[in-house]
Image (cartoon, rainbow, N blue to C red; front, top):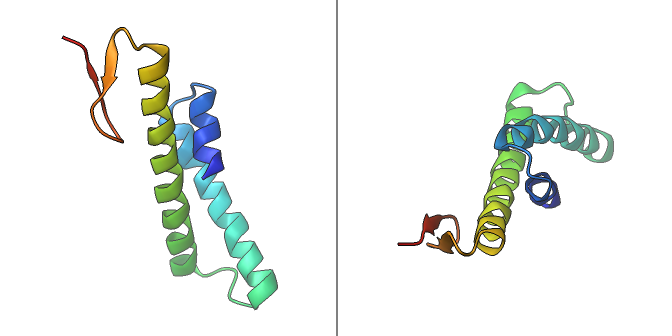
Length: 89
């Protein structure tokens, strides 16, 4: 998701992703309510929507953060997979 990548690009912490994805879950629930006439105040549907948003947001945040740490601090860090970086020896 673009939101997780944008939060990482401004060097904000990961818990900002959680806050924004929970709000995005409400927006997704409203769009489903208005377009598909589904229940707006359904807790289980909101939890599913918020979980999908959280997974996508946190994954894109992590991918961007690894890219930042490897490119900005290349003399210290090296890539250790798509979701991790490791210090140079």
